[in-house]
Length: 331
Image 1 (cartoon, helix red, strand yellow):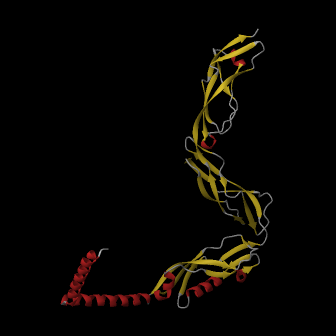
Image 2 (cartoon, rainbow, N blue to C red):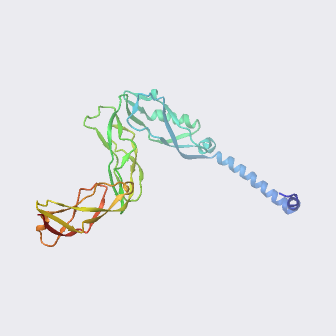
Image 3 (cartoon, rainbow, N blue to C red):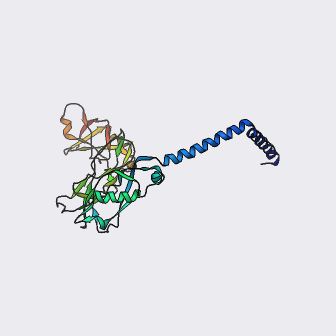
């Protein structure tokens, strides 16, 4: 900034400072300062009194099971947190009100009985009292116990079936079946898994009016007494637009007896259809036919039929649908 612009700013700041200083030295200014000092002192007293007041507060305490052996797979889910209600002075609970709460940790080996990991009420209560410290009263906590089966047996891999009812918007199509980021999941159980259990399904995906490829996070259907890993999968529904396409096909007579020649007017037809955008440049064999047997039917026209078309062709139409003809005798 140029020096000639800085000088006026300094002068204005100095003038403002002088006005404030003069106002504070006045009797009215002294009264304002005295009032503000009393407000500050009252606020400090209020803070100390508030921190010394006993209150009841609710907390969501994170839970973590530590030192789980690599060979162990839990069949159930450990609760991610405990809903705890405590009573104490705000000064005692202040550290839990600010910032992220650290997890309460339970050691695996201290809480295992047979094929179960068990956290009883006494164990949880003791940990909560240690967590919040002396002087804080534990009012309640939920859940009051945790009982989870586990296994050291290897899992069984089974196929994953995607259960979906998908409908696209008009002139759109699924270019392929929905697919997941994994094609199989692994099952774990504290008991033997039935040999007949070879496929598991996702929860149903029901969507309509899709106009673009869409990705969904879907849960795998739970099975009682079985841990499924992964229990959620990412399912992609590939959708693309249908593009209008036209081609010309020469009409080929079929079933014409010897000594006869069937001529159609016109000799070609135009075939219109919709095809997925990704297959727009792919051309499949396309043939048009008329059957000699249709000559015996009333009228002076015979219908045109097409060769079998691939499933990606949609809304197929032929123009004209029937053609005139003449039959010539061959000498």
